[in-house]
Amino acid sequence: MSKLETTTGLDIGSGKVTCVIGAPDPEGQGMRVLAGASVPCKGVKGGVVLDIKDTARAVRKAVEKAEEEAKQMVQGIVLGVRGKHLESFNNRGVCQIARTDKEITPEDVRAVIQNARAIPISNDREILHVIAQGFSLDRQRGVPDPVGMEGSLLEVEVHIVTAATSHLNNLSKAVTEAGFEVLAPVYTLKALGELVVTPEERDLGCLLVDIGGQTLSIAIYSEGSIKFSKEIPLGSEFITRDLAVGLRTTMPAAEKIKIEHGAADSRLADAEGEISYVGVDGRSSNKVKSGTMLGIIQPRVQEIFEVVAEQVQASPFADTEITGGVVLSGGGSLLRGTPEAAAQILNMPTRLGLVPPGSAVGPEALLEPAYASALALICHQEGAGGSSSSLDNGRAPEPRWVRRVKAFFKDLI
Image 1 (cartoon, one colour):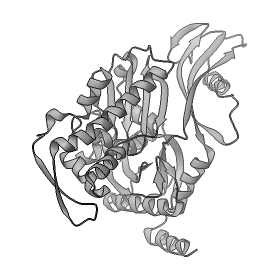
Image 2: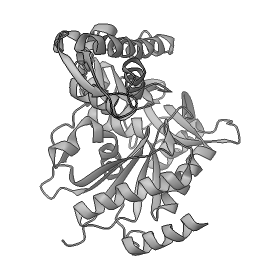
Image 3: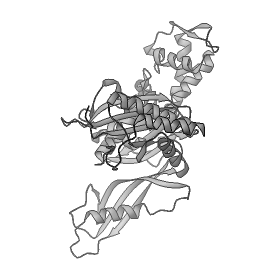
Image 4: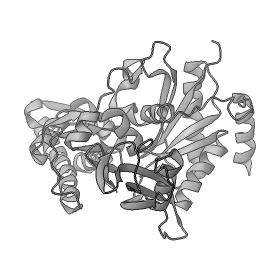
């Protein structure tokens, strides 16, 4: 296959690394997904690197599996960032237009956003994103794009996301050690919202909930932009762990039970049915009634969405009308009955955050919520006018055998 102008998204999440490779679709359907791969990683917990070598091995394995399927080589990566070390808040910037013509230029817009980001933060943190929520011109709010208009006072409201510098550096080191270059770190939830939340939902007001293995990411949208975001150390792996403890089985067996037989809504399962599984020793054969299993799963599901409700109520936007409802994403949202449970607990219409038509095309499995975060990263980069083509930095990508030789000697150190 000839070389394409590819973009690679890497989501280093909760206990796994997910990679998606895509290229602009020639028929104008957004991104064409060429390949994807997801591999377990014990070196990451809640989006934070605990073991750089183990994480680097998982990154290399995930990317190389995707490379082999796509028949394309990867050098640069759009890196997704998540985890409790992220913090966000809103701020405001002001810029006086002293020129006689009073016409707003792109430089004025950049200046007012730069003023909004001029805030004191601790030395161990750095700004990841400054997201413009909306502009005001001579006190008139609701201006989507002031460039070309005339006025004396330009204001902007922004959503600022900051990250712990050490955690960002550890993520970058893991990717670099795997043999790849980080083109840009991107807040995963930001990219995900751009992909799965429709403009109408953003205008009406909606809640995005991304359920990862060990992290729960939430965002409130209103008046077309993100108003609030939060990372919570809670996720679907807690359900798996509850099953492992309650049924006295292994984590892999509990995960299999959850995926194949689990449900967040008791109406979707036969409470009297029996499920066979292996014991904690990995050999003995046990049985459990579906009702018992559901009794373990459902309290944790309820806790997850009650925590979401508490965070929304505790935010400055508790009174925001969420007419657009709730959008669920992430691998944790695939548990049967999760949208129904969320709708009941949050008392809002709820849907799964599927990839909208025209945003991406490709194998159906790679358009599912489990791959949505990595897919959102390549769509975000494309939408930003950037490209992760391996030729953009002027260097050819390293062949896989070179990476493996380097990795071999690094592992000896």
